[in-house]
Image (cartoon, rainbow, N blue to C red):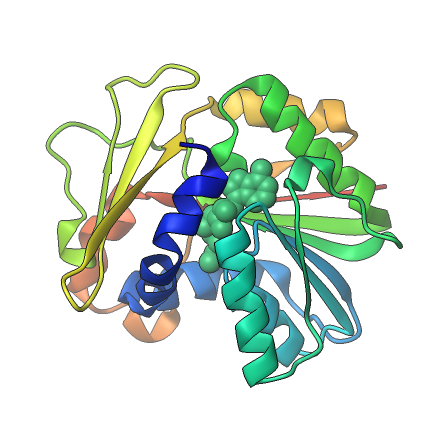
Length: 246
Ligand SMILES: C[S@@+](CC[C@H](N)C(=O)[O-])C[C@H]1O[C@@H](n2cnc3c(N)ncnc32)[C@H](O)[C@@H]1O
């Protein structure tokens, strides 16, 4: 199945998974910390899914937000939510690699986009799209399956509702299977793809970004004394990334 078909078939389950605790206390917290002040910023959110972060950016004061996703099902959910609660977000169904905004923007976000690239060439196409969408001085902020820390045999994140498995050690292009269990017990799965951290750095540099770097995912401060999170933080399944256009 293509990514479009996969996400058309799991759109509702994926949206529900945003209620899992790690989504809130690690994913959302890390992403928003990395982005910083959004007031007055123009944003393109590549791989926006059902728009959870596009809406968040709008609520945090972004002046214009365009969400882009390859899946018609995800875009339909995003548009339905925009009709239910109008925030002024615009949504476009497109392959991120082929997307160019009418005007370059201040910020491009890519939350779980790059980990769908199966080859260095595909990854290059995604970084080039990010670069093209930015104004000079603009920033790219991504969040991803952590290529610096592939899963190891015997490890488990099941108590957090996430299982993440791949061959050990993974090779370029290997699938990293994500199986998610929602609070209501529903389980669904999809593949990400492993590319080496050095491949990310090279693809970003070739696209024009000179300061690409990975950023460790962080736990929201209110949770830091809770040992419940120890396994998640030790296994580091998620990571941020950032780069800017000169
Ligand atoms: C794991 S979901 C993340 C959605 C959203 N960013 C979030 O955090 O909720 C990954 C999304 O990437 C989209 N996607 C995968 N490959 C894509 C591509 N080449 N262009 C645009 N969207 C893509 C999928 O359709 C899916 O909605």
